[in-house]
Structure formats: structure tokens, C-alpha cells
Amino acid sequence: MHEPHAPRSWFVVAAPKAAPVVATSTVLILGRIWNVNGAEHSVGNAALMVVLATGTAAAGAFASAGRAGDSVIAGTAFATSGALTLAGVAGYADGITLPLLLWAVTTVITYALAARTWRTDHRDTLTHERTTAQRREQYAHVERVEALRAGAQIQVAREGAAYAEALAAALTARAALPGFDATALTRAGLPELPAVDARMEG
Image 1 (cartoon, helix red, strand yellow):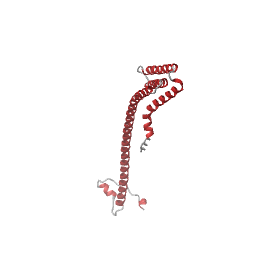
Image 2 (cartoon, rainbow, N blue to C red):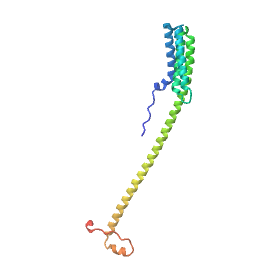
Image 3 (cartoon, one colour):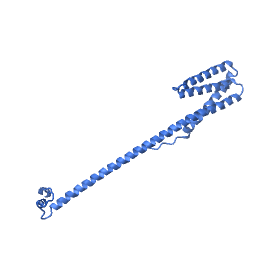
Image 4 (cartoon, rainbow, N blue to C red):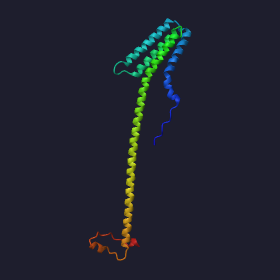
């Protein structure tokens, strides 16, 4: 017997869906905090963020190039590049409009990329569950067949034992009849019956 899966809590289901907006919002908030603490109109800080964002984007491009490209590393690098870009703009700009616009664009792109991964994971999960259910069904069928076969063998053995017991009782009863002569039956062409030991009858 297989125990049913426990239903997952709403937090476990909702957490992956909320992760992109939480991540981009966190970067935006940190960028604005950085802006208040001296990053506004700071060319050096902006140049640093541009270099870091460009470097991680290049790393993502190299990771995704060729047949042996790693999509996980590439996705992580591109996400990091986007976060650095958003943080740089949020820290350098003097207003909130441009950072908010970039935050919205980044969030939409992040959800678009995540949705593709979610669809793939959902397909893989359904395939795994379907395969598992088919295997369980197959094993359950084999178990039922083996149980029926064992039950049939037990029934045959019981019937054989009952038949042998009844035959032995009939032979014993016939041998105990008055005037029974096993030799006369054999001369008449009937099969010879096993002799009954008088000591066993007594």
C-alpha cells in the first residue's frame, strides 16, 4: 500500500512565484538606499556597476554558447547582470521614475524567463508522476496475478488432500465389509487393492 502524498502548504506553492518580484524589489530598495548614502550622480560608482554588469552579461553569453552550454550558469549570470544594472541606475538616478521603470521591465523579463523554467519543471513532474503511477499499476497487477495463482495452488492442494482422505476412508470401509475378497476381485480383472493390515484395523 502506498500512502497518499500530503498536500503542500500555500507558502511552498507561492514562494517560487513570488521570488522574482521579491528579488527585483530588494535590488531596487538597496539601490535607493545606496543613492541616499552618496551614490547619486557618482560617476565612479556608476562606472563600477557598468563594468560588473557587462562582465556578468559576457559570462552568461559565454556560458550559453555552443552545444555544451550550461543554461543554469547562463541564467544566473544574466540575472546577476540585470540586478547590477538595476542597482546602478537606482543608485545613480536622482529621481524614482527611471528606477521604477527599469524595475518593472526587469521584473517582467524575470517572470518571462522563470515561466519557461516552471513549465519545464511542471512537464517533468507530470511525466514522473505518470510513470510512477504506471509502474505501481503494473506491480499491483503482478501482485494480484501471483496472489490468484497461489490461491489456486492452495485450493488444488486442499482438494487433493480431501480426495485422498476420502479414497482412503472408502477403501477402509469396503475392506471392512463382510464377505469382501480382494483376491476374487483381482481374478475378475479388477485392479488389486492394497491389503489392509489387520493390526492397523485393530
